[in-house]
Length: 425
Image (tube, rainbow, N blue to C red; front, side, top):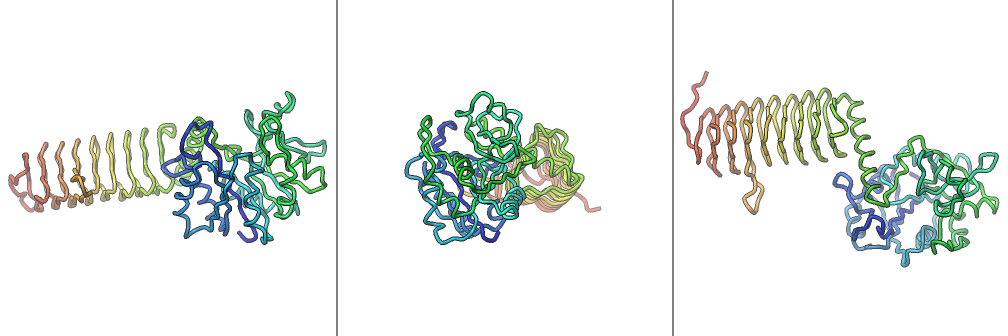
């Protein structure tokens, strides 16, 4: 996005989260909260980001190394955690020569959407505003600052929850903490904010009343979906955000033609691909990086881990775990199995209790199973090993490391030995 600088506030101490890890590094579906914000900014092509850090900045600094080729992130240290207005001050020198508008975000608000930021900045510029803030309506606005408007509907100030009068607590319009400022307006007024006597901090929210009283133009954009404004201050907040994100993901898949029988017990991470007419049964977990084809059946009580591919028309059933495996079309893995680092062909039957013993204490090894093979119940395949096309393993067999089973052979026993070869038809 042209002519837009971004400040991301991520200096918080995680006091209410009760953690030695910054709250922006707590994970949602395996990805730190801050990663969702940085990913969003990358998607809207932000060139430069001032990331305000404080508590455990060493951990934040280490995390953002993964983004060095995608974003220009400049760390700005808030030496003393004296509130959100004080957090803006260290970014002043970074933007000294910039002519762009400044977008302010929180690093612990991972639900904000790309289109929302685009709409906010568009409204800011179309209205020639000095400051445009993002608001939302909440039935239970506890812990959020309230938006105060005059009789003409114009925003006059923001009052934090702890400072609200009883009548103000009834207001349902809240401040999300996301703003777009003209750069010069922000930095020429930030030092005018006075310390809050109760909290002993400098509130960025106070700048709204200050600008209003000085004749600056203030506009507001109201969210249609208030859940976008959810921030993370407690572990309970984290759980609520995860639930919202989870249902968003499930809703998107259902709208694309995937059947999810029980959204309340299904967890699908971001970065998963699922083809049309696939059915996902209850109590199924599918992690990022999984690709599932069309017309598949997955679950119930199934865990599919990263780098797993299910080709079209596969069936993965009860209490099955797959990891870094490729399962061919029309293959069935119906009961109580673990397949790690497996390469399985088409029309294979994997019997209940089958395990690929892929880890030898040092390395993860590959198991290959040819098309048409029949793996008997409770078979253990000690990788690396290869089961040939149309081969059969008897129930309870242990196929040991490197003892490949030829095409069309039948093996049984511990260790498994060739019983006979099937006749070719």
